[in-house]
Image (cartoon, rainbow, N blue to C red):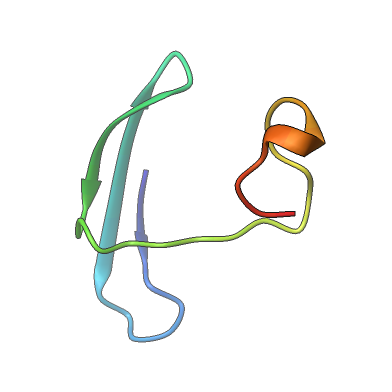
Length: 47
């Protein structure tokens, strides 16, 4: 996926295959979701 940063407009790139993240540019990229993501709620890093 290639998309602009919604804050500064710089390009962001995320490469995935079979639900695995293969590459991220820039490597300092962070994100969030409003929906629960992955597995049991007790084992998620952020709740």
